[in-house]
Length: 415
Image (tube, rainbow, N blue to C red; front, side, top):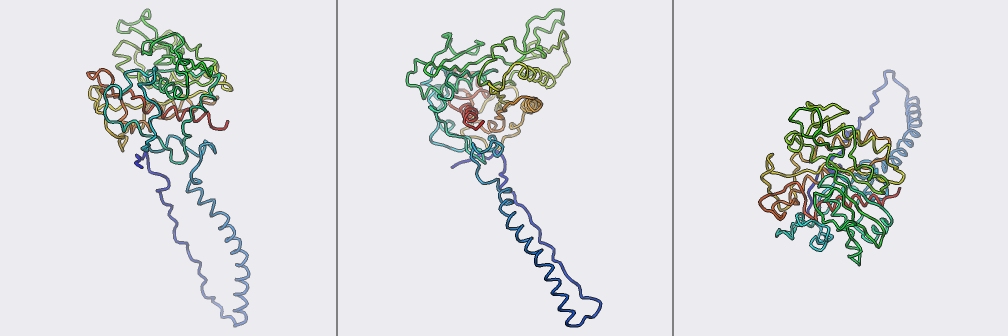
């Protein structure tokens, strides 16, 4: 089985144990008689015997615990304890049982993400599964998941990467529905990037999977008054998106943001940052991003009933452009073996920091590192328009399916 390691396993590290020092007893300075000599050794042996018994008992008692500690308690099962397994520390393994669906048979997969349908000839990129080092992600059981989602409301909020994950989840779930016509978009919308709200209903199970387009999570306001001419719009960092009321009362709520927090999408289009009534022309993107996340965090604490709603935040998804101008996109045939720094992101680090300070439970789907090795899984030139390559978005089926398998595994874990 082929694997691509994210990092060296702890089992590859060796624990060095030094040679124990030997205790020595020097010759006594006073000459003893043979009786006193033997009597002295009997006293010493008598004193050492119970001590030796105690040491041996402690050794045999502690040895299994120490062995377990350094071996990670063997292979942990996912349902045993979430604390024992980092789901995002692992390898991509080749698995012939993948992919889990055919995008050409899923009406909710955008044509631009259906790489195989758009002419991609190699198929190995479809068959990689993520394998954590210390546990197993439960294999996708569509009938079990459909029952667990019965009468529920699943909501994705974010940018086009969130929409891709939304499409992926719907395609995965449709494989278990006999009457495909019972799955439909409630407003008869076609799946496009221009629509702010999309909702697909699974009628037989009475649940919906919804997507709200909110690329910044905070409010984006056009043509603010009394600002310099270069300012065409602002992000109100202290106000969450004006459609945020519609995210409340969901059962599973998944956020993402990041790809629009770049100069090309902000300053170069005349978009700057605003706090209260003041436009902050000199504010940096990382500082603004943290302020926006603090606003999001405050909203979650005030508006979301976490006894009902399981809140997730998915971290930044790395792209694999060949250079910074985003013009050259060379999609590989297999996952790369070195992340080349793409396994870290200031956006992901900021998300982790913001969530850490929350007083309510939030689950971070830290997919940055695992996705960094999948340079083979981008849309590339197979997006329906070969003149505009794409090394940001992902093919379907593909990497977003694995994000969803991890997401759904939390539904299977004990509360």
